[in-house]
Amino acid sequence: MFYKLNVQDHIRVPPDKFGDDLEGSILSQVKESYEGHISKELGSVIDVIDVESVGEGSIIPGDGAAFYECTFTLLTFIPEDKEVVYGTVKDIADFGAFLSMGPTEGMVHISQTMDDFVSFSKEKVLTGRDTNQTLKIGDACKARIISVSYKNTNNPKTGLTMRQDGLGKLDPEEV
Image 1 (cartoon, rainbow, N blue to C red):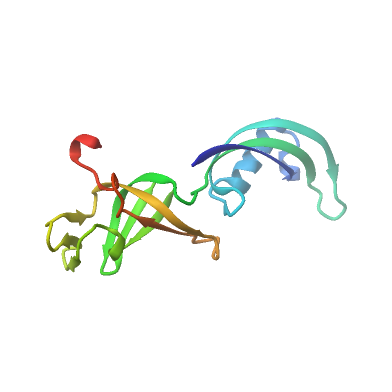
Image 2: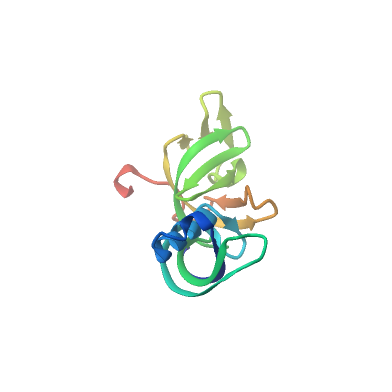
């Protein structure tokens, strides 16, 4: 789910930015610190929308930079359990498919790709034995999030399923 979050933090403005526009300097520092940041609390930070307020600055001895208490708005994506998401198959391995879901990726285990016995071919295609359904790189899909793990914040894991009614590979006219 996408969210607009208001965040309050102390932002460091280095001395070489002291002559510049304060809000512009703070915005650039916030973007540098937060864009691309991934955490359980914030999810994946996509963009810094705006700086809402800037408090009084203070200088910490030995640093030389000014620190300002600021409130700013972030656009984030936080994957939620049981949420239905759209994605595109980015890669296929013998154990499943990787879906690109905008700012993040998820993995569909081979057993969760379709209601059929599924086989993997060297051409990176998953095929259902009885239905002859296929799943290949570039296919648009609809999936449900079944697990989210931030154990490694540099590489969060999102588990997906496509084995429920209304989920799976989309027809070209649905895209």
